[in-house]
Length: 307
Image (tube, rainbow, N blue to C red; front, side):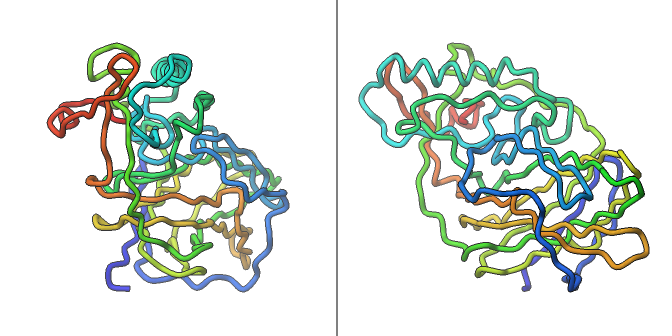
């Protein structure tokens, strides 16, 4: 596939990365934790054990476009531009935006996501406002994992691949986003600053259109953990500049003892459905009184904090 690229970066240094697809081991087993296929909101915390080998915890959950510490875990959108909204509905959204700004998240890291403090609960009227798993193609989606070796011996972990669980589709949807600062009554720039870098392993998948069961391999990434040792790994999903496409995918881990034949485990707990969109597919609105007014392109570029 001529435009297929895989990147692997580390906050503590660069790891080697295979340029060619990796041959998957023949031994494949299911995880031992029950899983529900119901789609959860971005930013939902999750924790589980994978077949007695490792414990996986994601405090901040799956996120899209959350490239600032106070951004929501997905896109905060509303379906229609009504003439006015009742004060109770607006207050619930205002409370949520305020809690994002006040939440003592872990901002001193390269990704600027919370990985030790969960996102606040989204309690707004979901028939009017949503947290959507969608990102501008310039940003991306990812999930921060803390992986613990729960065996009494050293083990080796490889992030083998992700597999498409459905055919990809072109995403032509338009998204009405909100200028967050207008909701809390303070000036643009209220979203906070970018933090420093913290040691972590980042595995980046460049996604492209494909059919169900398409496999995106992760090359030669490998990690050895001692008993009780914890590693911080970020699964990062990006796409092509023209890639306004929706994806449904599931990662797999390959785990075993150093020097022995490993086993590949699909991880349905980390299965996600999300989309990318072009800049032209987004509009931004500022709250004035009890109604929304469109924000100009110039205002967006001058830091309107459209979330």
